[in-house]
Length: 300
Image 1 (cartoon, rainbow, N blue to C red):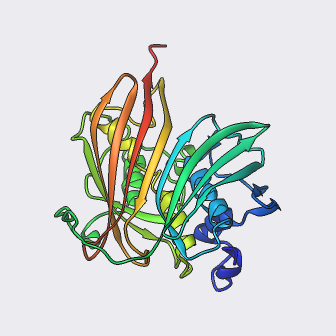
Image 2: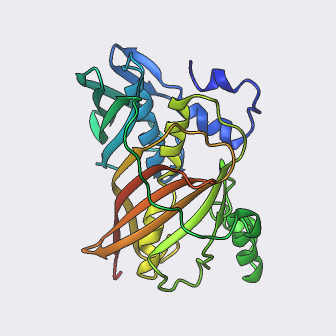
Image 3: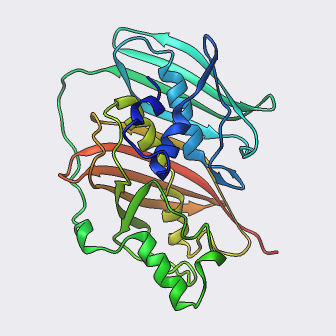
């Protein structure tokens, strides 16, 4: 069942429901799908959109009770906001325990993104995990939206002058470490953010995994930027995601707050590397991710 059909009780005007409509791909042929709706992003298609859509496309070719456990991908070309996207799925392997798919996202005959996804049936096994960082509870923190509005007020700037800066999102974010984007400075190479969806997600593991993959692209490169004292408002800065990997450790239930804990071990050679751990509020590690991004500061 498509995401839209599962959202009958949600407002069509909500940002969340519009985001979930991104997952409604059209079947073109046996292993070919397309997205002909409105893309999201700024100047180029948001990487999280394409990642989530490739996962959805792959799931449409998996006919057994296997769920994605790892996702490895490369961003190859900027996605054109005004054009449709075609997704081609290669059925690499169908096994009893594991299934593998390779997916390409294509515009104008050229791949803009490709990924490999491994699926596994659920089974019991030995367990351990790292502990969740000891951070303040989300109720004690300001939202990212509030922080940004306060910054604009302090600078006597109108909201209309910075629409992307205060754009409403499908999630509420409450950062533990606040920052002023107009006064960049070197910060410790980590960031912790509490996140909650602005509404309820369908009780569907495919949709929940796709949504978590979608929002996992928000903030990873930012941690690497912070470590060298730049951000998305820095003049002459060129930022772009180069690759992204994600591992799903548990069955997801994304209602309520969860913690996105990110650290950046290294930034060099015009690239920043970041790692993310995503915890449920009660401390269970539900997913992990890594990303390397372009951090190129032009002199002119």
